Image 1 (tube, rainbow, N blue to C red):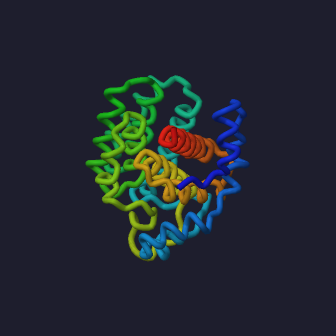
Image 2 (image 1 turned 45 degrees about the vertical axis):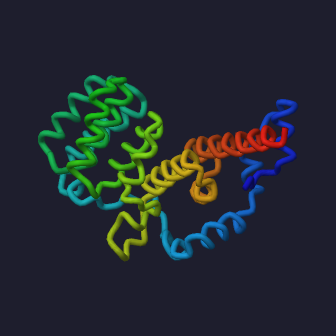
Length: 243
């Protein structure tokens, strides 16, 4: 079932009209989408209600690192985001990983550094190592899920996430506040997985959440592009069947 205005999609197919992604998706009937999900899986209606914060969230072992080292590690992470001196960053983070072997955040930063540096083999090995060493660390699962999505291995994601696609299912009962980066990362990969798996209503559900956080954020726009591509392909298939 298509949820985008079909007339506008037809114009795209026939005349090459440029899609206004944000505008089109904002017109989707949310209640219609959610009702279809909850009709099939009523247990989902009461799962996933939580609050979001941008304030730092205690990450266990990370809080035990001396402040001086924390600042240095965060400085390396800032360099990763700007792709500055990545080889040196990798060396620094590798040293900190050896110094603090039970802090998953360091493993995550190092994994990202390998990716930005184009060290594909080390990137993948670091992804696997992080998930295996810290099975409860959500950012590790998010990063490995994104790798699977980008390498057309999305069928591995349900097993990786224990078939749990709400962020609240990955934390102890009663956890009600989540950092915005965790929420954004989790529902970005969940939404992309649902598009690949053809579960478009659930993809929309993830999109709605990301859009409410920031409709112009890169993750929102990328998921929106995949949803629109899915809808266009569905319409093309419908035309072929009618010929």
